[in-house]
Image (cartoon, rainbow, N blue to C red):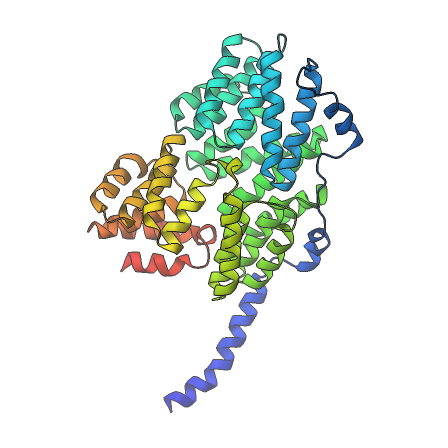
Length: 429
């Protein structure tokens, strides 16, 4: 009788489940398919070539160096090709060498290039040089804030943020949003970036507006407002159909919220045809693994390793590689080395959390717990970092704190990915 009842109820349960999934479905391939074939162009315009041809080893034409560097930086943003970022660096370095007037501008531009390369301490030195010159102080304070946030110097960063406080200025609004998110005040971060987006819309600057759309989409996702997140990724694609970041954001919604890994991979596979980024390959590998497709996972991991073999990436993907070694490949010794380097380059609560987890996976639970208590707990709201902390607490016999963090992280399952609920359940047992 029990089995008969079960068989009778099963179709009803399945029907209910399918209806629930249909109600929860937010994305529609018809919304974004037209964008998947769009690819960006490199720095090949006639305008770029004219200025690039002016650059010679003995050139003194400062304008050409700034313009060419900007074109290369734009090409890097569009394609992820590290060669473009390095070429931008070379042009800016030459500008720093020969500039007599406007040298602070080149210092700031080169510092931002170094931020993109995760060379934060070198960026800080350049920012200090620009500050010492006494010109462009508003831009100097904004740059100092950006770098100090990456270096975990939050009190000093706040000082520079206050120096540019002005609720009608974009440079302040976008940084106030970042600061609010860092402090765990996500509603304020969202409302501030919404205001920044309105300001960008009035300026009719498509690049700035596109940046606002994608970052606002991220914040909406953090807050569980997935429909708004999806809508804003689509808005970014309307402005630039080749925007790889927006496509990756939609792929994450499809994978994490809608549990459709095959469709997520279809989106990412189109992106990877023109956007060369190790983090895309790593996400593809994770999704393939969730499908149980070990062959595809291996192909994507090989691509990740191949991209990282380019020395131009430097330390840009240390955290990604360390996480891979800790979570998937079991190369915990290599992970520990990379995590140490990452803390040296970028001593934030998040990198200390990664280092703590690396110590934990290498058998040094006491050192891991010490780092969590001193450098992580109460200092960050990043879900992945707090998940590491919870696992370390549980292994250290502090079940109460582990369960408390696990309960809080239930609201962050979308960010952590569809594999996270089982880890959270284990932590609460």
